[in-house]
Image: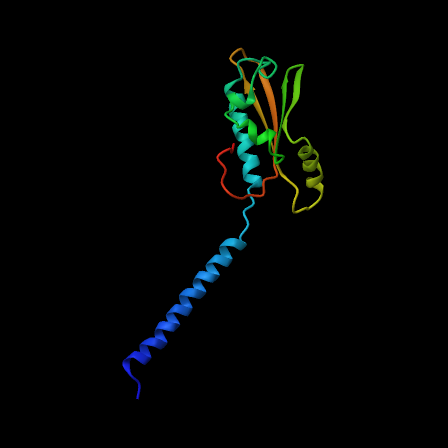
Length: 162
C-alpha cells in the first residue's frame, strides 16, 4: 500500500517544520530580550573612581593640583563629553577643608536621581552613591563621596566604554 519513500517524505517535512519553528522562535526570543545595564554600570563607575582616588590620596588637593580624572582613572573622556548617558559627582572632605563637588558628564542626571528615588519610573537613570574614608601617609583622613549615574539602557558593545 505505502512505498518506503512516502513514509520518509512525511517524516522529512515534519523534521523541517520543527527545525524551522525552532529557528523562528529562537530569533524572536533573542531580539525581544532587553538588557538593562544602568545599575551595573553605575556601580562599576563608582568603584573604579573610588579605587583611583584611593591610589592618588597622597595630595590632599589632588583635583585642584591638576589631577586629571580621565587619564589617572583610565576613563574615556568621550563617554562623558559626547554622550549624555553618564554623570559623576565627587565630594572630598578633609577636616575643615571641603572640596567639590566636582562634576563630570550630564548634570541633568543628578536631579533625575533625586526624582527617581521618590518615583517608580521605568526610564530614570540608576544611581550609585559610595562613601569611603581614605587615609594618607601623613595621617590625614579624606572622606570621599562619589555619585555615579548611568542612563545607558544597553545595546551593542562599544570600545569607547569605561
